[in-house]
Image (cartoon, rainbow, N blue to C red; front, side):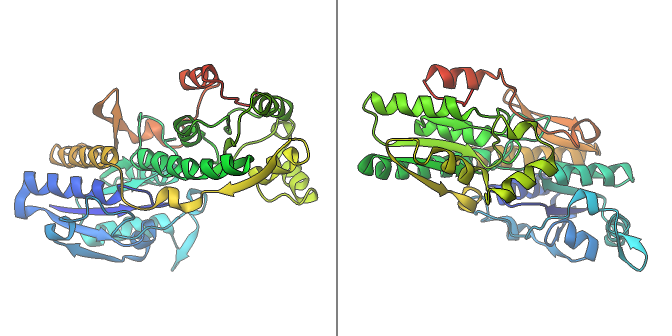
Length: 357
């Protein structure tokens, strides 16, 4: 029973915990018959045929470790059919190396782009099972992705620490949180830290509404304003532009990111100093939370069950607290974003948080 494992795309917490769950489950079901092959650096390793046979002990003490012991990389889906070597495309190289390794199945831990490639490999006849990882929580078909809860903790701790400085100096801090297309991380971390304004990609913001809300807070005696913004936010005006027009506008205004754009809009308009702070990659690093360790281990164990049952072409998911499986073809290429009437948004506004609308 030869099983390959790889971790693809950006890293996040609990990748190791998920592999721990997979391997524990496989050895529970198959004992020494299970042969585990760790594929190095994501799809790149599968393309280049870089892997190693691993022992159960290699996974023994990794439950709480951040990052991934196998390494990861990005292989954009739109380039996956490009010619790579000797007239073969990257996909053809992956299929060839899968067969050369003699694998009976391949477990892929990845995000949205990784799932599109996984589905393609499944359609090509490979025995694929996937696990949903990303701090953005934007994978369709699952209520939660592992890495998400840990990232909320990181972003919340960062903003909590920043808040004391904001209060001490009576400043307005714009805090950029990761999330280019989906605002799950920003809305959750923003509520957790008691942010005054939360801006997400799904709701183009009206700068007049944001200014009015900040003015109201200051007039009420509030010291230290926190504005949590996802990296992919747009103004109402920007949301109506084409991609080309948007890039031209930002280049003309010499604006590199959306948080800087908001900072520029608020400077000299607010009776307080406005500062911008970017949390960055620490949101994806460090030890996973207890929740993520449990979730990832459960998902991994279920992946082992699917292998035992010879059920392939699925992503393991969690829905309403229950571990389930989803057909890859039904979820690949779809993104789970926040609808404008999502319950959490209504509740945020009840907490007197401005969403820019």
